[in-house]
Image (cartoon, rainbow, N blue to C red):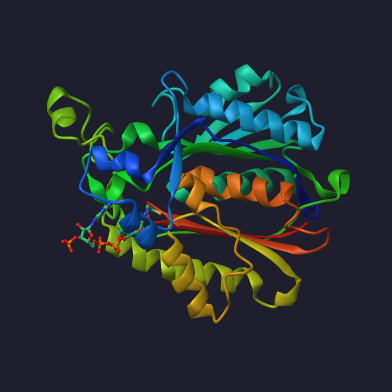
Length: 329
Ligand SMILES: CC(C)(COP(=O)(O)OP(=O)(O)OC[C@H]1O[C@@H](n2cnc3c(N)ncnc32)[C@H](O)[C@@H]1OP(=O)(O)O)[C@@H](O)C(=O)NCCC(=O)NCCS
């Protein structure tokens, strides 16, 4: 049997829409305040797409930046994988639109659906293809247009979500000599599927005038249950990723950007401070599958990850799903 091929992250990129919504915008629609939102979530603003801008557009912009950073041409990609819960269409996959418009003419393309764990699921899938010798260059993307699925009259959910995309190019580590993916894990517990749920629009409840009138196409949250799950999983995933490692070698932990209080509770449980966490929830809110790759790209570009040091990625969300990665930069 051939040995596993080591896989590296050769480049990253991200795209945030230009439209900025601060917390006061929501005071027009629901009974809320900037003070409540900042205290309970840490969110100060988020980005929402403009009319006509779709998930695939942000994927293409983020993907092209990642390709440029990696020095890879789209025509040399073997696979494009998009993690998203808000593709442009239910059919076909968002990844096919991205493959075509990037000019990745020699590439396969598919989406993965794992909500906030979507990027890590795409990353681990791409890593497995390369490790097994089935692909050499893989573009993995996490992207969301959540603003089109929030009920602006539901104050417990509308204030949380933002839009954006982040991407990474994977290739054999021998060829890029950076960002080696050392450890990965994915988990799920579908018994919690109703914690974060869109009831309508799928085959169980296809869209009709009645489902739309009922708001069944909007994301509904059981916030407190999700909160407890997120604190537990964040702490558990970090612990699992750093097990047996010298923690002083960890430069940065890039968590799914879910809630500042969840970060504080999870790090307190670990007995760690917040200093290793890369946090941008204040600027972008929760962008689901896009949040980890956007934060990773910002951390890389800000020089937060030094060569040979470790980065930990952790995500958790609807499904329920969760995942982690340990990367040596
Ligand atoms: C949603 C979330 C921010 C709510 O914060 P919380 O501190 O748990 O607040 P609660 O849900 O306990 O609600 C407390 C009160 O604030 C109210 N409230 C909720 N949203 C509000 C808002 N935007 N503005 C003002 N008050 C609000 C509630 O109605 C409730 O009022 P009540 O006590 O009179 O019933 C928090 O639970 C969270 O971040 N959960 C996880 C996020 C998530 O699910 N992300 C998606 C998947 S990763």
